[in-house]
Length: 598
Ligand SMILES: Nc1ncnc2c1ncn2[C@@H]1O[C@H](COP(=O)(O)OP(=O)(O)O)[C@@H](O)[C@H]1O
Ligand SMILES: [Mg+2]
Image (cartoon, rainbow, N blue to C red; front, side, top):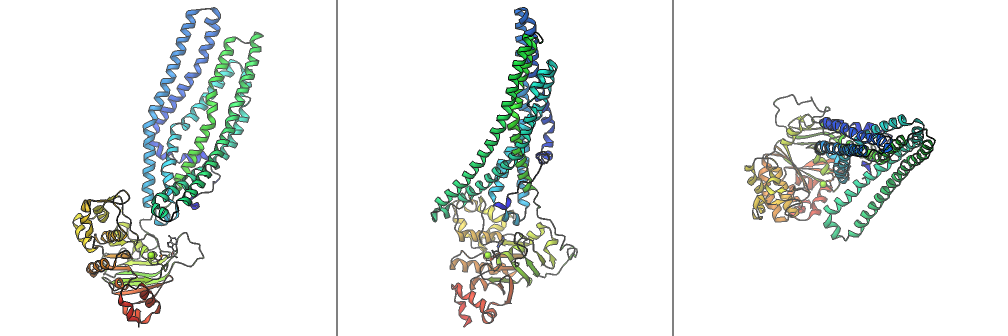
């Protein structure tokens, strides 16, 4: 989980937020108009004190009732104008901003689909989920509100201060007094808040992960009575998150205290000073009223700066988290390393599947650890099926995952009919190689869609019968039955048979099966094997197996031991000559083949 957590670098919030520009660009016209309208609205508010001044020094002082009414009408109109303009701003930004959010979310989704398996191994899914939801919502809110209002408030404060200085520059300076301590507090606050905001958002991601795992693993949790410990994990994480949020609140309270108190004190001081000046006749009552109501009108723009900064900081953090995922390098179309060595030859003879001194180490493994696979040399001839046998953890799954390039090999080459797989486009590679995994995933879709995955529908029945998956016809809606998380649950063996059907449906030239029959009962397995035999007759296949009956489907067997191929031969040869192999085969005990050893 913690691998996804960046240490908060010393980064500028502004520079981070600037990265949003490409997404915001399409909405720029409306955003700028909206900001302009908001500045206009805010400055309209500043005209009100000037009207007040005119009223106090004119009609009020002269006892002119009609003049007072006229002044009141002006004030009402100004108030209306201000409200209308703010309403217009809201209307202007709402739609384009939801569009920006949707685009960013779609972009993230597209990107995640293109990232290599190694990335998904490394990142907790909750961290990705929270980035795609909470963080993007924070960004939309930032673009809609703080971004505009930081600008609007700055302009309003500037204009207001100029108006006040023009009214009476001594009182103006009194009001400006707290500016320096307030700015200093804001700067300190920004820095601290950045760290805590990042922490809180990462913790939301961790919490999402726990919730997600609890939902996906609900059977295990219930079965093992783990709900208490799972609840404890959740409580602890949410307790931590609560602590972080409270820390945020404390920081916010501090800055708010400073930002609200100091200007109030200054306004109080100006009031006293102004009253003295009016009493001495140095200042007109109207000017004092105008001055003070301008100061009061500026209270909200100043007070709100605290949380506007907080929201901007959170948005900067959200942007950072968004781009951490977006900056991950997607799978390369072709790899420069192997490219050019053979891709240009138009017609190549069928040469089967070949591993040339392949070495592989998981990307997140330490540099000095031994590779999971070391100097694998293996040649599966065209049309041949090769079984891959080895103890648990010997690297069988890893080896099969290299062929469709779910992981990139560390060194060496893998060729299909002589062509380096790294020189092929992913599309070409995946049209040649089909896979079935030991633990198959079904998507929330119909059985048919799960098997076909884009292949022509006419192939469906053949594939289902090869995989002995005819049980689907007995499902409530046949091949149209919904399965997956939102549909019918299927047994492990049923899912494996669908996965197998998925692998053979496109009639691939190369078939890579990772223990595809492990969850089948002996009778079903025998039936699937009989059908597979026909498919295997004209495909080149690599099949991870551990039952003698499955191994016998293959023409030859390769023994993988601690990441190396230690023996290759027919089942019977290896049984005779290789003690480890004989041991592996005798242990599985569901077939009489083990007798051959003695
Ligand atoms: N995604 C991964 N990241 C790091 N190490 C892994 C990963 N997957 C498997 N391994 C390690 O690689 C070794 C081989 O695993 P695997 O290929 O699954 O073996 P097998 O399928 O033969 O049981 C194991 O030691 C396992 O811990
Ligand atoms: Mg395995």
